[in-house]
Length: 336
Image: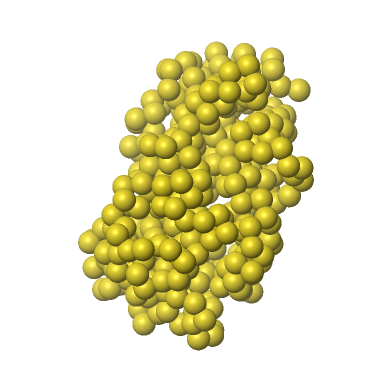
């Protein structure tokens, strides 16, 4: 452990936020942590762990500056990591009255801000007026549950300025966390969003009884569809879609037992309604919100839109009450 070179804050109290706090405590003497719930705050002070997520991770309370006052936490930090589920992130950001000018802000949100149909980086740039040079993304492939178990994991740190990415890499690196660097900030953030949609598709296929052979074809088509979507809707730069931040993150989300999006999709495939699946899971499946935004954004391009049969099928199932079995029979004819 080293003394703090930077004051770092994490916003959010879910499993991914908890995992990030754990990673940071490997290298920092103090980490500020915003949790919205007064219950979570008081439970942590008494029992040293998050009561809802990754309960097995015990923290040293002397390292954690925890608060349910978002402005107190933001004011403390010069580097902020946002790990709030996308469905709630705008409401939380709207509470901030502290000047964000000069602060480095990293998105660890794997979803789209529903109110603006923007990934968080673009939302922060447009609505919080944070310059692009001060924005970054923390992406996978990495599940919070494996971080809690200290299993070897890899992160991709994306930022326009290499110095900014290097700072974050140093803060997160440990014997069980390895990091790589990318300049493709918005492309990688979009990949982190879209992989949740494809994981729902993989889950639906599993719930319907499709086997490994079909899953392999579905995921190989998914990575190509992701590339087309990002090229049409982000920018046309050349990307190695085989890199861990794209293909690796997609694979772990589509196949892992820890994937809430795959679990959600599997329940839909087995006949659950959206509402009943969400109620039983008690966790946010980011892909549910992401598919609606991705579908609408692509649709707005008219005749110039990317061909996205998998996104379209998941959207119809989740938002238009299309039958999963019927949609996947149609989809199977479009895959190759």
